[in-house]
Length: 225
Image (cartoon, rainbow, N blue to C red; front, side):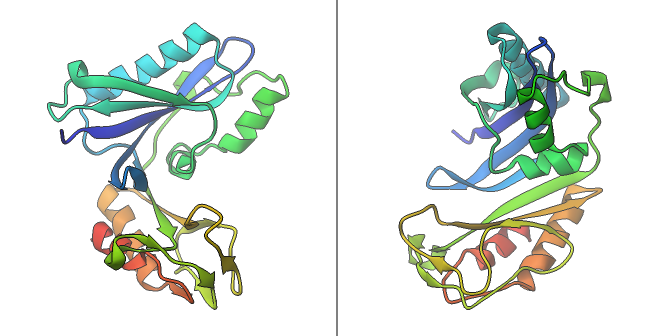
């Protein structure tokens, strides 16, 4: 109960090199689907962070892992290393990988392509440095006021406020159907502090205009506040 969903970004090459790029906190969810992700986690101790990252790298080395991946864990409410439970390894880039890119100044897509081409990783663990805090929210075509029911239709206007990174495949006139995932956009903010990132993100979301469908933008603003 009251566990945290914390995951570690790893990447390995075919030459036996493996590094981790810190952890992401993904505990703010709805119906067991992630809504808010951030890096680093603000809810774990240095002891737990070290155990998670070292465990993820050890697992990757043991299986000879190649490419980008995510090792996912549950951390119990007690918050000690003895409360860590392994969940799974996602053998791909995650939706939330931008928060790692922004806090670690790396391009995970480029690294994955280099590894796939047979190159050795251009970084070692000693090169990995985290800077600031990043938060990502998932803007989805769902109506929180109606039990998170899906919302479909034609997007008349699509605009996200300034000062943030926006990863999306939609624009004015896009059709949102029931045939695909409800994700409309990922909005990511980076700042020196967690509270600063939340303020930047909330400001951009308040300035957003998405008409024609219902979304969770107001809920995301409330969470960031």
